[in-house]
Amino acid sequence: MNPTSLTKTSHGRDDHWLSVTRPTAMTRFFRTFLPWQFVRFIVINFKMMRIIALSHRPPR
Amino acid sequence: MGARVVVLGSGIAGHTAASFLRKWLGKEHQVVVVSPKTDYNWIPSNIWVGVGLLRAGQVLFPLPPVYKRAGIDYRQAKAVAIHPEGAVDAPSPFVEIEYTSPDKQGQHERVAYDYLINATGPKLHFEATPGLGPGQNTVSVCTADHAVEASKLLDEKVERMRKGERQRFLVGVGHGTSTCQGAAFEYIVNLEFELRRRGVRDKADITYLTNEYELGDFGMGGIHLRQGGYTTPSKIFTESLFAERGIDWVTRSHVSKIEPGRAFIETLAGEEKELAFDMAMLLPPFRGAALKAFDKDGVDITSRLFAPSGFMKVDADYTAKPYEQWRAADWPRTYQTEFKNVFAAGIAFAPPHPVSVPRQSLKGTNITPAPPRTGMPSATIAKAVAHSIVDMIHGAKEPTHTASMAEMGAACVASAGANPFTGTAASITVFPIVPDFEKYPEYGRDLKHTFGEIGLAGHWIKILLHHLFLHKAKMRPLWSLIPE
Ligand SMILES: Cc1cc2nc3c(=O)[nH]c(=O)nc-3n(C[C@H](O)[C@H](O)[C@H](O)COP(=O)(O)OP(=O)(O)OC[C@H]3O[C@@H](n4cnc5c(N)ncnc54)[C@H](O)[C@@H]3O)c2cc1C
Image (cartoon, rainbow over all chains, first blue to last red):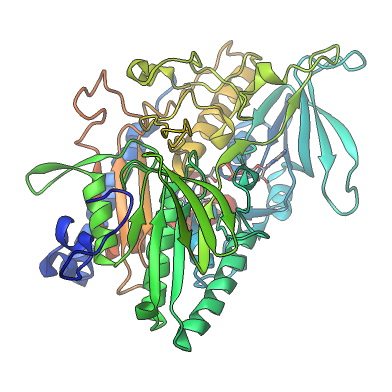
């Protein structure tokens, strides 16, 4: 793809449509599927706390 | 006798430093905050003000009552000059301030200090691009006022779309050396989400304009994530989200000038183009606050304390060297300046060099994102500096705490649409922020701790952070337990 501009292909679809990784319907569904997102909420919070713990250095 | 610590600025860094200094220092010591605006602004939530989802009052609160309760001496003023050696008629170091409060407007005063923290953040350097910025041809979300103006313009455009007109939105950065692409990213995806919510998405053409070489660079040289059996660059995920949302993009660009409804850009390849828009939200490049410095005899020593960009020189390696020789160890650790009692925290310190690969257009224009300095590192640095100063007041000879951006990670939640059931946000963790290719030769980062995911859970976390950080900034009960 031309990196600095979006071009239309001969059949009218944006170049993005053809050359870019896109999420499947399943991936999009899970992004807002409440039971799964409750689980992710806990997992992501845990991952973030781990980064915070790693980033607060003890005195040198 | 007690010591006096003066903190310049009451943003994320200055306010964090002042709060912890007050908590850790006994009452015999004085903490003074000098800052021109009385309101604290939780800047990350300005994005939601800019699309009309929050009012300015929900991201701002007045600091003077908080400081009064905490026992912090607050001066509504801006720092003008630092005199780290004092002056002929003043034996101790002092900072010259100019009041901005209505009752003392324009009055100057010398505030003596034993320790000084410069946390004056960025000067929004709209002037770097002719025609850029509020009052000119584009809007911004860098301050709550700017965001309110952006939201009003958006309302006007939505009205036009409701009447059947097509509108073109241009969102991104307004200069080849801007940083803060994360904020521009959040604004564009929130704008797209909001236009859908208001039922006018089909009437909008939305384009992202950036100085990044590839989408997903974010001034960090991009990040790599392990997912689905591959190590994938952030470019793939960012492009994917934009394509999914029907957002067009223009990368590798410097904005040379803005006229009403038209942005003139120069690309790395040397092309010159014109992009037409009906509404543009373009973030400016940052400079340091225009502080001066003088020695005891009144000789200007600004260039000793500050880099040409206006940011304060600290314990970094500022030797000019080619990209191949950049090292993680170039980045500052203690944020002490050549004067042992003067520190910089947050955006105010001068980074040694960018993180992204530096690039110039064929015409020699620098088109390289400046390094990012988001809220979490700003606050973490401020806390480390406050800790060091407390220890130095209690007898330590050198700073005791470090917070190098090449040794710390960041957790970041980028909103991609605000709704408690249908909204999403990208939750990202990276470690370290500045890649260390000696320690992690392949990607510069520890991929065990580098993670990204889009989903509703991220939006809930973003809401939680908004409330937690405002609670913390208001120094309400248990504030100090909330991490940076
Ligand atoms: C729209 C937007 C969204 C963002 N979103 C996020 C996000 O989601 N997550 C994240 O981590 N980061 C985010 N950031 C970045 C984050 O806001 C900054 O990293 C942070 O504000 C930097 O803190 P600071 O204290 O260095 O500067 P600031 O917060 O800008 O504070 C600077 C302070 O200095 C004061 N000052 C200025 N000049 C003087 C002077 N001469 N004398 C005394 N005081 C002075 C100012 O009034 C202010 O109080 C975002 C930024 C923007 C613009």
